[in-house]
Image (tube, rainbow, N blue to C red; front, top):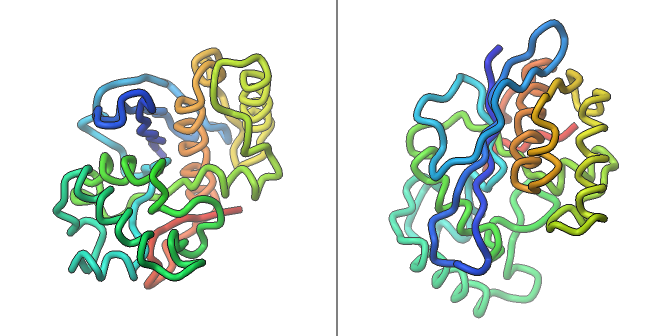
Length: 224
């Protein structure tokens, strides 16, 4: 089964710049997840396999979508700046505890968080083209696997070591088929590259377990 993990990421120093993408493409072969390519680009690959997991929000909370007059996330017709402004206005007027509502089974950061909202907007063209994307909520996934979800970003030796530990756990089969990745240095050097690999591993786990999207769910966010 061919599959892909995608991870958009932005530069915090250039909040208005379009996010870039890491892509981890491969297949489950001989009981292992073989990642053939781990690459960075300005956009996701034009041709994607049947099974794709995205390390970015694939939907927004229903109560927020209603204020936009949208039935589905793919119907959002706002620029990134307009969407951020509407989310700020929502947070300013929402009651305490509902400023950043979460979507079940999302347990980490809300899709309305200012750090994640630009990633949702970057993924909109994919969401309009496909309605079968798996959402890899990386923080929730790492928590479910009892792996560190904090301290993974940045160039510090501690962050590099934390990423290496996560990658080693994937090689050992902590999430479905054991990982076979030759470009380990890329995944260890970049948090976003590691997110793409985690998304691919989640897609492999979904395939291996025969998991299906729950009916009526706001997003398909499978967790082990």
